[in-house]
Image (cartoon, rainbow, N blue to C red; front, side, top):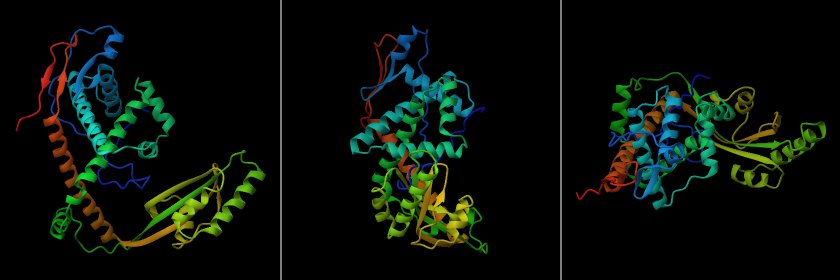
Length: 348
């Protein structure tokens, strides 16, 4: 594997209930380099602990910078240069401010949200998590470096949505103008596409995939299938059974699902459950909570609306971060830790 491409996706307007959508454009805030520190290399232990910047009294160490610079190089194909390190330092400063703001307003990122985002990266890059970890390790990058970056982006996205989502407004004129510019305003006769809301339960094998275990798990699956009323109640009912993994998918296009599951779901109406299917992990049953038939034109319109909302949220994000940087105290101590360069809060 030559290198891993970490696809940039916007997390600002991502719905937190969708485990597959986390995988969306990763928000990065690259700002001009304020100051780049380079000088004679100290002893390795000292270099790891050396504070190269503080953001409102929270330190960024040489090790933090080294790890992120290596990560950026490994995922972009660039070399670690003074210019790259300077850009990375500004990213780390921005992320400190973003996490400080998230903490101030009470935003946290759960382990489940972080895992869903990492799984999305793994899926988009068509590489399993163990290979991704091995790749980063081969570049002397800890997995925690990626996790910290994603955790910050998720938290910051939540901050921006919470603070500015009510201010986002997309008018009909904006939609028509955008669609005319992108050539999406013509009549569309391509038919419709099916969009599903799903609840999947996997009754996992706990004693190996032997005949008795498969039979017992199949009995449990049939009981759960017969008990289905609503997706929310079904998740609660599943907790009664041992070792059941529940996965809620808020929205997914039928055409994007692999066979043979796609054919089964195509025949399953809303409020029904597919027949149990044996997989290497266990017995899988899927409830169709809701299904919508959207015209291709309607799908393009929703895509444009989402894109315009994301653009507005990105603008709010940049402005809010700029305000945080303006009011922050950012210090760059020299190698002895004395005579720091200080950026004081703006008086304007």
